[in-house]
Every structure is written in structure tokens, then in C-alpha cells.
Length: 306
Ligand code: NAP
Image (cartoon, rainbow, N blue to C red):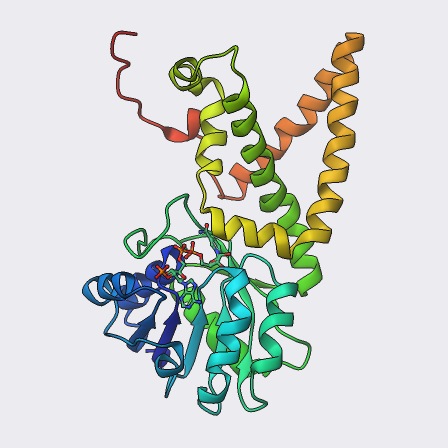
């Protein structure tokens, strides 16, 4: 057991996956949870929480680890609510996809005798809610921590040992760097996927049934990303504004360069560009972050009437 009592605030995909992983590994003495709706709390109680409470203030009492697992936009009000109820010596962490905005929202409400160690698991699916979680979600996935310079090394080490016991690889970096890295690897790609799916939806010359029927040509992978939770992603773009706009600016320039190459019939430019990008995929596979199997290892049911 690494923590005696863990309080999970918000009981969706990430919190439920943490609870399943902690239970599987015997990592927490007691798992207490709370969420906005009574329905989510009841589901969590049935599936993975030892105890649920109606309010976050009650949930954090006596907890030696508190994990904020709510959308980024809900963090400030939550931190204000729990601040006076945190136990001295406890650790507070979060799983928000953006770090600078969460730190600005949460840190002012954390008492001096409580450790605040912000975090972000680079793991997820397009599903949300308390039934979406599973114990292996964090297996071999990165979990980034952005502790302040004066963070207590023992508190950081203890949190790290929990995350590693759940299967994650842990790294630390500063919050502005985190937000830039994630703008490149996650936030902007999501925006592009949302846009592409929106464009297909708007294109009346191609029927909806054609878009769906022939989606395996590439579009399907955009739709998986574009099915991600609207609240979570709204908050990501509202709070990681500068880094996302920076990367989107670069993206737009590259897109115009490719558009120009297509217009001018500049095959050398296109070929060189696609050769460079193909190497990135190899790097991801070699790092063990995706499968080498064709089409992500999908096993497809035969197409009816196709
Ligand atoms: P989720 O499945 O949509 O769950 C969010 C949970 O937060 C729900 O249980 C919701 O309660 C609860 N909640 C919302 N506002 C609340 C409030 N004011 N007080 C108490 N509970 C509240 O979300 P998720 O995917 O687990 O994401 C949670 C966090 O993890 C977000 O900050 C997100 O940026 C981050 N994250 C997500 C992913 C991903 O791929 N999904 C990956 C890494 C990090 P109800 O169910 O009652 O509405």
C-alpha cells in the first residue's frame, strides 16, 4: 500500500482507470470518490470506490492523496472548495491535460503544509464516464509531473511510485514546456481532427452514407479522435491558448506550402515531406508507443454486401 486513503474528485475515465489499477495492485488502503451527479457516484460505488461522498470537501478529509480528475475548467472552484479541508502533509495532484492554467487555478488554494504536484497521464480513449475505465489504461504510457522547484522530493517520489505501480513511465518537466509539447502531440492534432470531420460533415456533394461507408480510407481515424469529450476539449483549447495558437500558426504555414506544391505539381517537395514524416511513425513504434501491425492491428468484420 502506497497511500492510506486516496480521494478521487471526478469519477470519469481517468479516475475510474486509476481506481481499477490501484485496486488491482493493492496500492491504496481506501478509495473515496465524489462526482457532480448522484448517478456517477452510485456507479462508482458499485464498480470501484470503497466509499463515495456528496461533496468534494467531505471526500478529501483525512486523505493522504487527493487526485483532481475533473475537466480543467472546473479545477479552480474545486480547489477553493477543498482547500480548507485538506489534511496537513497530504499530497494533491491532478490529471488535467493542461498544466500552467491548472497550476494558476489550483495552487493559490492549497495550504502551505500540503504538497501540490501537478500531473498529466498521456493515456486516454474517446470514451468518458465512470464505466469507461480499465486497470491497464496507464500501462507503458507516460505520466508527466510538473512539480514546482521547491517541491518536497519525498512527496514527489511517493507519488511517482504510485504511478509506476499502475504501469506508467514517469517523467518530470516544467509546466510551460509541458503545454508546448502537448500542443504539438495532442491538442493541435485533436483540433485538426475536429476540423476534418466537420469539413466532411459540411460537404454536401459527398453523401453521409459515402463518408461512413468509405471511411476506412483514413477518415475513420480522424473520427475516433473527434469523438472525444466536448467539455474536456473545449477547456483544453480555452486554457492552452498560446501554445496551441503557436503550433496552429506553424501548421497553417506548412499546409499552405503543401497546397502550393500540389498546385505547382512539385512532386519532389511532396515526396521529401512525406518521407520525413514517415520516419516519425517508425520512431513511435520503436519507442513502444504504438503497434507495428498494419491498420493499428484492427481485425475487421467482413463488409456486408460490399
Ligand atoms: P470524464 O470521463 O468526462 O469525467 C469527468 C468527471 O468529472 C465526471 O465524473 C464528472 O462528474 C466530474 N466532474 C465535473 N465537474 C465536476 C465538479 N465540479 N465537481 C466534481 N466532479 C466534477 O473525464 P476524463 O476523461 O476522466 O478527464 C478528466 C480529466 O483528465 C480532465 O481534466 C482531462 O483534461 C484529463 N485527461 C483526460 C484524458 C482523456 O483522454 N480522456 C487523458 C489525460 C488527461 P459527472 O459524471 O457527475 O458529470
